[in-house]
Each structure stands twice: as structure tokens, then as C-alpha cells.
Length: 142
Image 1 (cartoon, rainbow, N blue to C red):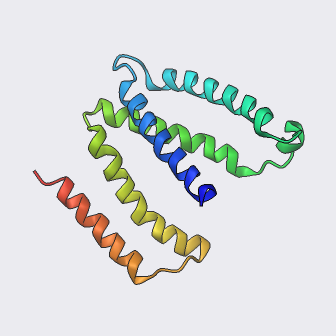
Image 2: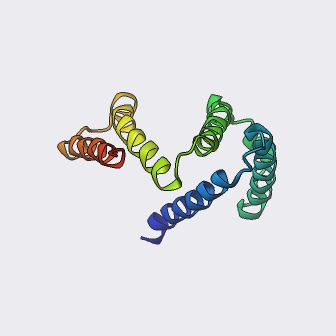
């Protein structure tokens, strides 16, 4: 059970801190300048953790296994980061921005899972889409 729950706890904790950090980027700072520091720190942390948590790993050998995914992921992560920073600069609140994007994302990923990975589309998932869309409507009512 622990192996199932700890990654979720890490994602939730990291996402809370992430949203606080994204909201706290100085208004006058260019988000891309901020992200250069973010990714330098992230690269250093990843490099160090590779050797701390790896079992006599060979990072060069690992790099030989690269495919397109890490390169596209790097570009997409920049879009995620800068998107949130600009959302907050535009006036989105922390409590609403994450919920709105997560609900929209959940709906889209149900269909991505079905189309790309042949994941089953159950009535529970369809009901979940309806609940997500209803939640978006409720959150955005004024």
C-alpha cells in the first residue's frame, strides 16, 4: 500500500508548493528568466538524485536509451510552467486556476487514454466527465 500511496503524496505536496512558487514569481520578472533558474536547479537536483538513489548507475548508458519523449517533455514542461505563471499574472486565483485546468485536463485525458492507450471508457468515467464539467460551471458562476 505504501508503494501505491507515497508517489501520490509526493505529487500532491509538490503541486501545492509548485502553485505557491508559480504564484510568487515576481510580477516584474520575465517568466522565462525565472524558468532558467528553475531548470538549472531541477537539472542539478536530478543529476544528484540519480547518483544517490541509483544503484551504481551509468548515466551515459542511460542517455543512450533516449527517445523523443524527454525532449518533447522538456518543451511541454516549459509550457506548463509559463502557462501557470501567466495565469497568475492575469489574475487567476490559486484556488480556482488549478481546479479549472485539472477538470479540463481530466476530461481530455479520459479520451486520450481511450484513443491512444485503449483504456476502457466506462459509465463511471462518463459520469466523471459530467461531474467535472458541472464543477467548472459551478466554480465559474458569478
